[in-house]
Length: 166
Image (cartoon, rainbow, N blue to C red; front, side, top):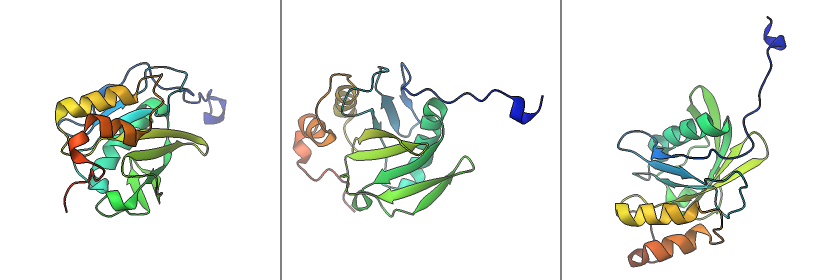
């Protein structure tokens, strides 16, 4: 059978029923909303271990690609990361990085050319119990709070500047 005769299945247009795992052992934790409706404000939460985007992003993109299909763009607040290249190669695919003023608490991920996913970013160095609590709240289908509100409630001792010291 020729490649053109092979049926081509598009990735699902909804999030998986369950994903709550370390992206790589000892690194970031990823959690996605557990409903197909995508009615919440946020689609998931990501807890990177550092502010080095070139170290953290490839594992996240690989995990998301496995569940959502090819990721084409990622929007990040450049001031929240230690250097922000304009693109990265992940699994032999070019991922374009956009410096968006989305805040250091949110990452916007694009699948294809129009399908966007908003992930709350739990600051590196956050205590595990606080991080898990914030992530659980972010992925609730009935969540109406923005990432900054969730993090402020879960991590009140950090105030508004949740970035690691330089």
